[in-house]
Image (cartoon, each protein chain N blue to C red):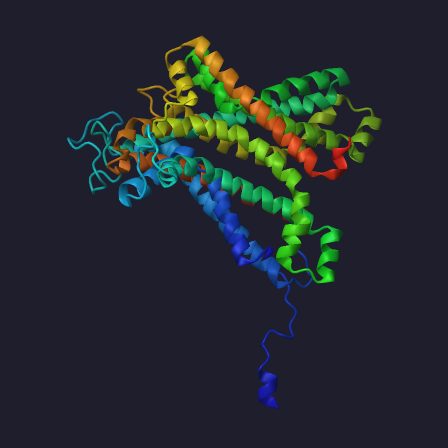
Length: 193
Length: 302
Protein backbone atom coordinates (compact mmCIF):
# COMPACT_ATOMS: atom_id res chain seq x y z
CA UNK A 1 0.00 0.00 0.00
CA UNK A 2 2.56 2.57 1.03
CA UNK A 3 4.99 1.51 -1.64
CA UNK A 4 8.31 3.34 -1.45
CA UNK A 5 7.53 4.83 1.93
CA UNK A 6 9.76 4.53 4.96
CA UNK A 7 7.96 1.50 6.43
CA UNK A 8 8.12 -0.29 3.12
CA UNK A 9 11.85 0.28 2.73
CA UNK A 10 12.52 -0.73 6.32
CA UNK A 11 10.55 -3.94 5.98
CA UNK A 12 12.33 -4.60 2.73
CA UNK A 13 15.70 -4.28 4.42
CA UNK A 14 14.70 -6.50 7.34
CA UNK A 15 13.25 -9.24 5.16
CA UNK A 16 16.25 -9.09 2.87
CA UNK A 17 18.54 -9.70 5.83
CA UNK A 18 16.36 -12.41 7.31
CA UNK A 19 16.20 -14.41 4.10
CA UNK A 20 19.90 -15.17 4.28
CA UNK A 21 20.08 -16.20 7.93
CA UNK A 22 21.10 -19.80 8.71
CA UNK A 23 18.55 -21.84 10.66
CA UNK A 24 20.88 -22.74 13.47
CA UNK A 25 21.59 -19.08 14.12
CA UNK A 26 17.88 -18.43 14.59
CA UNK A 27 17.58 -21.54 16.74
CA UNK A 28 20.55 -20.72 18.98
CA UNK A 29 19.46 -17.10 19.37
CA UNK A 30 15.90 -18.16 20.15
CA UNK A 31 17.04 -20.67 22.74
CA UNK A 32 19.41 -18.11 24.23
CA UNK A 33 16.86 -15.34 24.46
CA UNK A 34 13.69 -17.22 25.30
CA UNK A 35 14.92 -20.14 27.32
CA UNK A 36 18.09 -18.96 29.02
CA UNK A 37 17.68 -15.24 29.55
CA UNK A 38 13.93 -14.73 29.73
CA UNK A 39 12.86 -18.24 30.80
CA UNK A 40 9.59 -18.01 28.98
CA UNK A 41 9.83 -21.24 27.05
CA UNK A 42 11.43 -24.58 27.93
CA UNK A 43 14.65 -25.38 26.10
CA UNK A 44 13.93 -29.07 25.95
CA UNK A 45 11.11 -29.54 23.49
CA UNK A 46 10.25 -33.19 23.69
CA UNK A 47 8.06 -34.36 26.53
CA UNK A 48 5.97 -37.50 26.55
CA UNK A 49 2.81 -36.02 28.04
CA UNK A 50 1.24 -32.83 26.90
CA UNK A 51 -1.15 -31.49 29.47
CA UNK A 52 -2.97 -28.66 27.77
CA UNK A 53 -3.03 -26.61 24.64
CA UNK A 54 -1.06 -23.88 26.34
CA UNK A 55 1.62 -26.41 27.26
CA UNK A 56 1.71 -27.78 23.75
CA UNK A 57 2.11 -24.30 22.33
CA UNK A 58 4.90 -23.48 24.73
CA UNK A 59 6.77 -26.64 23.89
CA UNK A 60 6.50 -26.34 20.16
CA UNK A 61 6.91 -22.58 19.97
CA UNK A 62 10.66 -22.49 19.51
CA UNK A 63 11.14 -25.15 16.82
CA UNK A 64 8.26 -23.73 14.83
CA UNK A 65 9.65 -20.22 15.25
CA UNK A 66 13.02 -21.36 13.96
CA UNK A 67 11.56 -22.96 10.88
CA UNK A 68 9.19 -20.12 10.17
CA UNK A 69 11.54 -17.21 10.63
CA UNK A 70 13.28 -17.35 7.28
CA UNK A 71 10.13 -18.51 5.54
CA UNK A 72 8.16 -15.51 6.78
CA UNK A 73 10.75 -13.21 5.28
CA UNK A 74 10.75 -15.13 2.00
CA UNK A 75 6.94 -15.16 1.76
CA UNK A 76 6.77 -11.47 2.65
CA UNK A 77 9.08 -10.64 -0.25
CA UNK A 78 7.21 -12.87 -2.67
CA UNK A 79 3.81 -11.55 -1.61
CA UNK A 80 5.00 -7.99 -1.94
CA UNK A 81 6.38 -8.63 -5.42
CA UNK A 82 3.23 -10.44 -6.56
CA UNK A 83 0.93 -7.79 -5.13
CA UNK A 84 2.89 -4.92 -6.66
CA UNK A 85 2.58 -6.72 -9.96
CA UNK A 86 -1.19 -6.88 -9.54
CA UNK A 87 -1.59 -3.36 -8.21
CA UNK A 88 -0.36 -1.93 -11.49
CA UNK A 89 -3.13 -3.56 -13.51
CA UNK A 90 -6.10 -1.68 -15.01
CA UNK A 91 -8.81 -3.30 -12.92
CA UNK A 92 -7.22 -2.14 -9.67
CA UNK A 93 -6.93 1.34 -11.12
CA UNK A 94 -10.63 1.13 -11.98
CA UNK A 95 -11.42 0.18 -8.41
CA UNK A 96 -9.40 3.14 -7.19
CA UNK A 97 -11.30 5.45 -9.50
CA UNK A 98 -14.54 4.04 -8.18
CA UNK A 99 -13.47 5.09 -4.71
CA UNK A 100 -12.64 1.72 -3.16
CA UNK A 101 -10.50 2.23 0.00
CA UNK A 102 -6.89 0.96 -0.28
CA UNK A 103 -7.17 -1.99 2.12
CA UNK A 104 -10.24 -3.35 0.40
CA UNK A 105 -8.53 -2.83 -2.94
CA UNK A 106 -5.62 -4.97 -1.84
CA UNK A 107 -7.58 -7.68 -0.06
CA UNK A 108 -10.59 -8.18 -2.31
CA UNK A 109 -9.26 -7.22 -5.74
CA UNK A 110 -5.54 -7.71 -6.02
CA UNK A 111 -4.88 -10.53 -3.56
CA UNK A 112 -7.02 -13.28 -5.12
CA UNK A 113 -5.16 -12.83 -8.37
CA UNK A 114 -1.81 -12.89 -6.66
CA UNK A 115 -2.42 -16.30 -5.05
CA UNK A 116 -0.92 -18.14 -8.05
CA UNK A 117 2.68 -16.88 -7.73
CA UNK A 118 2.39 -17.15 -3.94
CA UNK A 119 1.43 -20.82 -4.17
CA UNK A 120 4.44 -21.30 -6.41
CA UNK A 121 6.62 -19.66 -3.80
CA UNK A 122 5.17 -21.98 -1.15
CA UNK A 123 6.14 -24.96 -3.27
CA UNK A 124 9.68 -23.69 -3.57
CA UNK A 125 9.91 -23.11 0.16
CA UNK A 126 8.99 -26.70 0.86
CA UNK A 127 12.44 -27.91 -0.06
CA UNK A 128 13.90 -25.34 2.30
CA UNK A 129 11.62 -26.60 5.07
CA UNK A 130 12.73 -30.17 4.51
CA UNK A 131 16.31 -29.10 4.97
CA UNK A 132 15.51 -26.92 7.96
CA UNK A 133 13.70 -29.69 9.81
CA UNK A 134 16.93 -31.67 9.93
CA UNK A 135 18.73 -28.86 11.73
CA UNK A 136 15.84 -28.18 14.09
CA UNK A 137 15.60 -31.83 15.08
CA UNK A 138 19.31 -31.88 15.83
CA UNK A 139 19.26 -28.78 17.99
CA UNK A 140 16.08 -29.49 19.91
CA UNK A 141 16.72 -33.24 20.16
CA UNK A 142 13.53 -34.47 18.60
CA UNK A 143 13.64 -38.21 17.82
CA UNK A 144 12.23 -37.67 14.35
CA UNK A 145 12.79 -39.17 10.91
CA UNK A 146 15.25 -36.45 9.95
CA UNK A 147 17.57 -37.14 12.87
CA UNK A 148 17.13 -40.84 12.16
CA UNK A 149 18.43 -40.14 8.68
CA UNK A 150 21.38 -38.13 9.98
CA UNK A 151 22.32 -40.95 12.34
CA UNK A 152 22.00 -43.45 9.54
CA UNK A 153 24.33 -41.34 7.41
CA UNK A 154 26.88 -41.16 10.21
CA UNK A 155 26.69 -44.92 10.73
CA UNK A 156 26.70 -45.68 6.97
CA UNK A 157 23.47 -47.62 7.27
CA UNK A 158 22.73 -47.36 3.58
CA UNK A 159 19.35 -49.09 3.46
CA UNK A 160 18.01 -46.84 6.21
CA UNK A 161 19.33 -43.80 4.35
CA UNK A 162 17.56 -45.00 1.22
CA UNK A 163 14.28 -45.48 3.07
CA UNK A 164 14.41 -42.08 4.75
CA UNK A 165 15.36 -40.35 1.53
CA UNK A 166 12.47 -42.01 -0.28
CA UNK A 167 10.05 -40.96 2.45
CA UNK A 168 11.23 -37.37 2.39
CA UNK A 169 11.31 -37.04 -1.37
CA UNK A 170 7.93 -38.73 -1.72
CA UNK A 171 6.39 -36.31 0.75
CA UNK A 172 8.07 -33.42 -1.03
CA UNK A 173 6.66 -34.50 -4.38
CA UNK A 174 3.13 -34.87 -3.00
CA UNK A 175 3.29 -31.43 -1.40
CA UNK A 176 4.63 -29.81 -4.56
CA UNK A 177 1.85 -31.42 -6.54
CA UNK A 178 -0.71 -30.03 -4.09
CA UNK A 179 0.82 -26.57 -4.41
CA UNK A 180 0.69 -26.81 -8.20
CA UNK A 181 -2.96 -27.87 -8.06
CA UNK A 182 -3.69 -24.93 -5.77
CA UNK A 183 -2.01 -22.55 -8.20
CA UNK A 184 -4.05 -23.90 -11.10
CA UNK A 185 -7.31 -23.84 -9.17
CA UNK A 186 -6.77 -20.28 -8.02
CA UNK A 187 -6.67 -19.00 -11.57
CA UNK A 188 -10.14 -19.54 -13.08
CA UNK A 189 -8.75 -19.19 -16.56
CA UNK A 190 -6.65 -22.32 -16.11
CA UNK A 191 -9.32 -24.35 -14.35
CA UNK A 192 -10.98 -25.69 -17.43
CA UNK A 193 -7.88 -26.72 -19.35
CA UNK B 1 4.84 42.33 0.68
CA UNK B 2 8.54 41.81 0.94
CA UNK B 3 8.20 39.37 3.82
CA UNK B 4 5.73 37.31 1.82
CA UNK B 5 8.20 37.08 -1.01
CA UNK B 6 11.07 35.98 1.22
CA UNK B 7 8.94 33.26 2.79
CA UNK B 8 9.35 31.03 -0.24
CA UNK B 9 12.20 28.57 -0.22
CA UNK B 10 15.43 30.05 -1.57
CA UNK B 11 15.72 27.28 -4.14
CA UNK B 12 12.07 27.31 -5.18
CA UNK B 13 12.62 28.99 -8.50
CA UNK B 14 15.88 27.34 -9.48
CA UNK B 15 15.77 24.12 -11.39
CA UNK B 16 17.79 21.31 -9.88
CA UNK B 17 20.28 19.68 -12.21
CA UNK B 18 22.61 16.76 -11.78
CA UNK B 19 26.28 17.42 -11.74
CA UNK B 20 26.90 14.40 -13.90
CA UNK B 21 24.82 12.32 -16.28
CA UNK B 22 21.69 13.82 -17.78
CA UNK B 23 21.24 17.56 -17.96
CA UNK B 24 17.49 17.40 -17.44
CA UNK B 25 16.03 18.66 -14.18
CA UNK B 26 15.87 15.86 -11.66
CA UNK B 27 13.08 15.28 -9.13
CA UNK B 28 13.41 14.62 -5.44
CA UNK B 29 12.39 10.95 -4.91
CA UNK B 30 15.05 9.56 -7.21
CA UNK B 31 17.71 11.29 -5.16
CA UNK B 32 16.36 9.78 -1.97
CA UNK B 33 16.13 6.30 -3.44
CA UNK B 34 19.66 6.50 -4.71
CA UNK B 35 20.96 7.31 -1.27
CA UNK B 36 19.07 4.35 0.18
CA UNK B 37 20.54 1.96 -2.33
CA UNK B 38 23.95 3.28 -1.54
CA UNK B 39 23.40 2.51 2.13
CA UNK B 40 22.57 -1.17 1.60
CA UNK B 41 25.35 -1.48 -0.91
CA UNK B 42 27.95 -0.02 1.43
CA UNK B 43 26.78 -2.13 4.36
CA UNK B 44 26.82 -5.26 2.22
CA UNK B 45 30.17 -4.41 0.72
CA UNK B 46 31.63 -3.62 4.11
CA UNK B 47 30.49 -6.83 5.78
CA UNK B 48 31.29 -9.06 2.83
CA UNK B 49 34.66 -7.40 2.29
CA UNK B 50 35.46 -7.86 5.96
CA UNK B 51 34.86 -11.60 5.69
CA UNK B 52 36.93 -11.87 2.52
CA UNK B 53 39.78 -10.20 4.35
CA UNK B 54 39.32 -12.53 7.30
CA UNK B 55 39.38 -15.50 4.96
CA UNK B 56 42.59 -14.27 3.38
CA UNK B 57 44.50 -13.02 6.40
CA UNK B 58 42.70 -14.58 9.36
CA UNK B 59 45.22 -17.21 10.44
CA UNK B 60 47.97 -14.58 10.40
CA UNK B 61 46.02 -12.30 12.71
CA UNK B 62 44.93 -14.99 15.15
CA UNK B 63 46.48 -14.39 18.58
CA UNK B 64 46.82 -18.10 19.39
CA UNK B 65 47.24 -21.15 17.17
CA UNK B 66 44.01 -22.89 16.34
CA UNK B 67 44.39 -25.99 18.42
CA UNK B 68 46.18 -24.52 21.44
CA UNK B 69 44.63 -25.01 24.86
CA UNK B 70 44.95 -21.61 26.43
CA UNK B 71 42.61 -21.55 29.35
CA UNK B 72 41.32 -23.77 32.08
CA UNK B 73 37.87 -22.30 31.87
CA UNK B 74 35.43 -24.02 29.53
CA UNK B 75 32.90 -21.73 27.85
CA UNK B 76 34.48 -18.64 29.30
CA UNK B 77 32.87 -15.31 28.69
CA UNK B 78 34.18 -12.33 26.78
CA UNK B 79 37.29 -10.89 28.37
CA UNK B 80 40.31 -8.85 27.40
CA UNK B 81 42.51 -11.88 26.89
CA UNK B 82 39.90 -13.91 25.02
CA UNK B 83 37.67 -11.48 23.12
CA UNK B 84 35.23 -14.14 22.04
CA UNK B 85 35.52 -16.44 25.01
CA UNK B 86 36.80 -19.99 25.17
CA UNK B 87 35.28 -23.12 23.77
CA UNK B 88 34.38 -26.45 25.32
CA UNK B 89 38.01 -27.54 25.60
CA UNK B 90 39.49 -24.25 26.65
CA UNK B 91 40.69 -23.03 23.26
CA UNK B 92 40.46 -19.42 22.17
CA UNK B 93 37.32 -18.87 20.08
CA UNK B 94 38.61 -15.82 18.22
CA UNK B 95 41.53 -17.73 16.73
CA UNK B 96 39.33 -20.68 15.86
CA UNK B 97 36.83 -18.46 14.12
CA UNK B 98 39.52 -16.56 12.24
CA UNK B 99 41.05 -19.79 11.00
CA UNK B 100 37.76 -21.57 10.40
CA UNK B 101 36.33 -18.74 8.31
CA UNK B 102 38.88 -19.57 5.67
CA UNK B 103 37.29 -22.98 5.11
CA UNK B 104 33.76 -21.66 5.00
CA UNK B 105 34.40 -18.74 2.67
CA UNK B 106 36.93 -20.57 0.51
CA UNK B 107 34.83 -23.69 -0.01
CA UNK B 108 31.72 -21.69 -0.73
CA UNK B 109 33.49 -19.43 -3.22
CA UNK B 110 35.01 -22.38 -5.06
CA UNK B 111 31.69 -24.22 -5.16
CA UNK B 112 29.79 -21.11 -6.29
CA UNK B 113 32.26 -20.35 -9.07
CA UNK B 114 32.24 -23.96 -10.26
CA UNK B 115 28.46 -24.28 -10.25
CA UNK B 116 27.98 -20.96 -12.05
CA UNK B 117 30.64 -21.92 -14.57
CA UNK B 118 29.11 -25.32 -15.27
CA UNK B 119 25.55 -24.01 -15.26
CA UNK B 120 26.26 -21.02 -17.48
CA UNK B 121 28.48 -23.06 -19.76
CA UNK B 122 25.79 -25.65 -20.31
CA UNK B 123 23.20 -22.93 -20.66
CA UNK B 124 25.04 -21.25 -23.48
CA UNK B 125 26.04 -24.55 -25.01
CA UNK B 126 22.48 -25.78 -25.23
CA UNK B 127 21.56 -22.81 -27.39
CA UNK B 128 24.06 -24.07 -29.95
CA UNK B 129 23.12 -27.70 -29.84
CA UNK B 130 20.47 -29.38 -31.99
CA UNK B 131 16.96 -29.40 -30.57
CA UNK B 132 16.77 -32.97 -29.29
CA UNK B 133 20.08 -32.73 -27.45
CA UNK B 134 19.07 -29.45 -25.88
CA UNK B 135 15.82 -31.00 -24.66
CA UNK B 136 17.57 -33.95 -23.03
CA UNK B 137 20.14 -31.69 -21.31
CA UNK B 138 17.28 -29.61 -19.96
CA UNK B 139 15.46 -32.68 -18.67
CA UNK B 140 18.58 -33.90 -16.87
CA UNK B 141 19.02 -30.56 -15.15
CA UNK B 142 15.31 -30.38 -14.31
CA UNK B 143 15.54 -33.70 -12.53
CA UNK B 144 18.54 -32.53 -10.55
CA UNK B 145 16.84 -29.31 -9.56
CA UNK B 146 13.86 -31.07 -8.06
CA UNK B 147 15.89 -32.92 -5.43
CA UNK B 148 16.17 -30.96 -2.16
CA UNK B 149 19.78 -29.93 -1.71
CA UNK B 150 20.30 -31.18 1.83
CA UNK B 151 18.86 -34.58 0.93
CA UNK B 152 21.21 -34.93 -1.99
CA UNK B 153 24.17 -33.88 0.11
CA UNK B 154 23.23 -36.31 2.89
CA UNK B 155 22.81 -39.23 0.51
CA UNK B 156 26.11 -38.51 -1.23
CA UNK B 157 27.95 -38.22 2.07
CA UNK B 158 26.51 -41.52 3.21
CA UNK B 159 27.69 -43.20 0.05
CA UNK B 160 31.12 -41.66 -0.35
CA UNK B 161 32.14 -40.28 3.03
CA UNK B 162 32.59 -36.64 3.93
CA UNK B 163 35.66 -35.22 2.24
CA UNK B 164 36.18 -31.78 0.81
CA UNK B 165 36.09 -32.76 -2.90
CA UNK B 166 32.90 -34.71 -2.25
CA UNK B 167 31.29 -31.74 -0.51
CA UNK B 168 32.12 -29.53 -3.45
CA UNK B 169 30.73 -32.12 -5.87
CA UNK B 170 27.49 -32.48 -3.93
CA UNK B 171 27.06 -28.71 -3.73
CA UNK B 172 27.74 -28.23 -7.43
CA UNK B 173 25.26 -30.98 -8.30
CA UNK B 174 22.61 -29.22 -6.23
CA UNK B 175 23.17 -25.67 -7.41
CA UNK B 176 24.47 -25.89 -10.98
CA UNK B 177 20.99 -26.73 -12.36
CA UNK B 178 19.63 -23.47 -10.99
CA UNK B 179 22.42 -21.55 -12.67
CA UNK B 180 21.79 -23.55 -15.84
CA UNK B 181 18.13 -22.62 -15.83
CA UNK B 182 18.82 -18.92 -15.56
CA UNK B 183 21.61 -18.98 -18.12
CA UNK B 184 19.51 -21.00 -20.53
CA UNK B 185 16.55 -18.67 -20.40
CA UNK B 186 18.83 -15.66 -20.81
CA UNK B 187 20.66 -17.26 -23.72
CA UNK B 188 17.48 -18.22 -25.55
CA UNK B 189 16.15 -14.71 -25.09
CA UNK B 190 19.35 -13.20 -26.40
CA UNK B 191 19.52 -15.59 -29.33
CA UNK B 192 16.46 -13.97 -30.82
CA UNK B 193 17.99 -10.51 -30.83
CA UNK B 194 18.78 -8.80 -34.10
CA UNK B 195 22.51 -8.53 -33.64
CA UNK B 196 22.75 -12.29 -33.21
CA UNK B 197 20.80 -12.77 -36.39
CA UNK B 198 23.05 -10.29 -38.14
CA UNK B 199 26.11 -12.20 -36.97
CA UNK B 200 24.53 -15.40 -38.17
CA UNK B 201 23.82 -13.86 -41.55
CA UNK B 202 27.39 -12.63 -41.71
CA UNK B 203 28.45 -16.24 -41.58
CA UNK B 204 29.99 -16.33 -38.13
CA UNK B 205 30.38 -19.74 -36.56
CA UNK B 206 28.23 -20.84 -33.64
CA UNK B 207 31.09 -20.69 -31.16
CA UNK B 208 31.88 -17.10 -32.08
CA UNK B 209 28.25 -16.11 -31.62
CA UNK B 210 28.15 -17.73 -28.20
CA UNK B 211 31.41 -16.23 -27.01
CA UNK B 212 31.27 -12.73 -28.42
CA UNK B 213 27.61 -11.91 -28.93
CA UNK B 214 25.61 -13.76 -26.30
CA UNK B 215 28.02 -14.14 -23.42
CA UNK B 216 28.97 -10.49 -22.74
CA UNK B 217 25.28 -9.57 -22.48
CA UNK B 218 24.54 -12.38 -20.09
CA UNK B 219 27.43 -11.93 -17.75
CA UNK B 220 25.86 -9.39 -15.39
CA UNK B 221 22.90 -11.59 -14.55
CA UNK B 222 25.11 -14.65 -14.28
CA UNK B 223 27.34 -12.87 -11.79
CA UNK B 224 24.34 -11.75 -9.73
CA UNK B 225 23.09 -15.30 -9.74
CA UNK B 226 26.52 -16.51 -8.67
CA UNK B 227 26.24 -14.25 -5.66
CA UNK B 228 22.91 -15.83 -4.74
CA UNK B 229 24.39 -19.30 -5.18
CA UNK B 230 27.22 -18.30 -2.85
CA UNK B 231 24.73 -17.46 -0.09
CA UNK B 232 22.83 -20.73 -0.49
CA UNK B 233 26.04 -22.73 -0.63
CA UNK B 234 27.36 -21.16 2.58
CA UNK B 235 24.09 -22.11 4.26
CA UNK B 236 24.22 -25.65 2.92
CA UNK B 237 27.85 -26.25 3.81
CA UNK B 238 27.51 -24.83 7.31
CA UNK B 239 24.36 -26.87 7.80
CA UNK B 240 26.22 -30.01 6.80
CA UNK B 241 29.14 -29.17 9.09
CA UNK B 242 26.67 -28.50 11.85
CA UNK B 243 25.33 -32.01 11.44
CA UNK B 244 28.86 -33.38 11.60
CA UNK B 245 28.88 -34.44 7.99
CA UNK B 246 30.77 -31.55 6.47
CA UNK B 247 34.32 -30.54 7.08
CA UNK B 248 35.82 -33.11 9.41
CA UNK B 249 38.06 -32.44 12.45
CA UNK B 250 40.85 -31.39 12.88
CA UNK B 251 39.95 -28.97 10.13
CA UNK B 252 37.25 -26.70 11.50
CA UNK B 253 34.77 -24.62 9.62
CA UNK B 254 32.24 -22.27 11.18
CA UNK B 255 29.41 -24.80 11.17
CA UNK B 256 31.44 -27.45 12.95
CA UNK B 257 32.50 -24.81 15.48
CA UNK B 258 28.82 -24.33 16.32
CA UNK B 259 28.41 -28.08 16.55
CA UNK B 260 31.28 -28.56 18.99
CA UNK B 261 30.10 -25.88 21.35
CA UNK B 262 26.40 -26.65 21.30
CA UNK B 263 26.72 -27.98 24.85
CA UNK B 264 27.23 -24.46 26.08
CA UNK B 265 23.88 -23.32 24.77
CA UNK B 266 22.06 -23.82 28.05
CA UNK B 267 24.67 -21.71 29.85
CA UNK B 268 24.40 -18.93 27.33
CA UNK B 269 28.07 -19.26 26.39
CA UNK B 270 29.32 -16.93 23.72
CA UNK B 271 31.25 -19.82 22.15
CA UNK B 272 28.05 -21.01 20.50
CA UNK B 273 26.72 -17.64 19.40
CA UNK B 274 29.91 -16.26 17.89
CA UNK B 275 30.40 -18.72 15.00
CA UNK B 276 26.66 -18.74 14.25
CA UNK B 277 26.66 -14.93 14.16
CA UNK B 278 29.73 -15.08 11.94
CA UNK B 279 27.93 -17.21 9.38
CA UNK B 280 24.85 -15.04 9.69
CA UNK B 281 26.71 -11.80 9.06
CA UNK B 282 28.57 -13.34 6.12
CA UNK B 283 25.38 -14.43 4.38
CA UNK B 284 23.49 -11.24 5.22
CA UNK B 285 26.31 -9.06 3.95
CA UNK B 286 26.57 -11.02 0.72
CA UNK B 287 22.80 -10.92 0.27
CA UNK B 288 22.58 -7.15 0.81
CA UNK B 289 25.44 -6.55 -1.60
CA UNK B 290 24.00 -8.77 -4.34
CA UNK B 291 20.55 -7.30 -3.98
CA UNK B 292 21.75 -3.70 -4.10
CA UNK B 293 23.85 -4.44 -7.17
CA UNK B 294 21.00 -6.12 -9.01
CA UNK B 295 18.50 -3.42 -8.03
CA UNK B 296 20.82 -0.63 -9.13
CA UNK B 297 21.37 -2.36 -12.45
CA UNK B 298 17.63 -2.74 -12.93
CA UNK B 299 17.02 0.96 -12.26
CA UNK B 300 19.88 1.90 -14.54
CA UNK B 301 18.34 -0.06 -17.37
CA UNK B 302 15.06 1.86 -17.17
